[in-house]
Length: 144
Image (cartoon, rainbow, N blue to C red; front, side, top):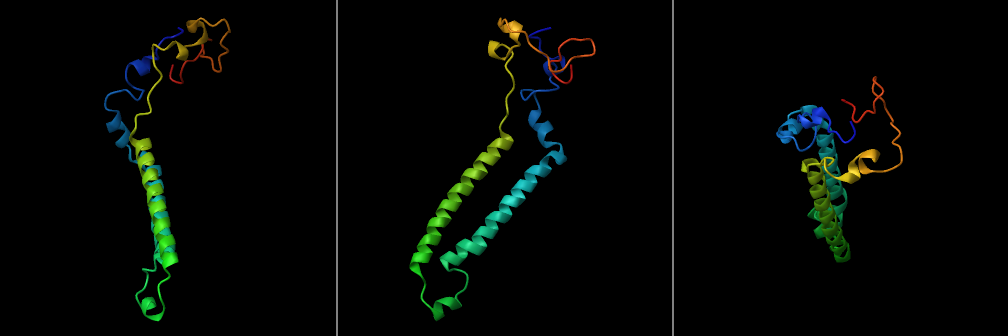
């Protein structure tokens, strides 16, 4: 029926609002592999940029250089500026990535008319189903 809630969703098998969602999300190790890949990649890029660019600009890489020639202060100032900008951008990335992992994505509201099918909203336009059940009814989700 139009406007009806999926029985599996109503039973709590689906949906971000179901109790114990955090336990289900973090109990499956295979779902953490992409997260660990992105974290590892970001950590490698962070270390690589600091090691091979910022430390060279800051001229902190070797003490013998100070004995042979003077420190270039404009280069060091540029290194400090780039380091501050890089750390701010990295902090924003870490915060947004962490929030995207931990934040509840939400669900479709049950009582908002904007989210209901055409006839339930009172639209005159006929809803053209993309998928049909074996009985010929419109499919509302892939489980029912």
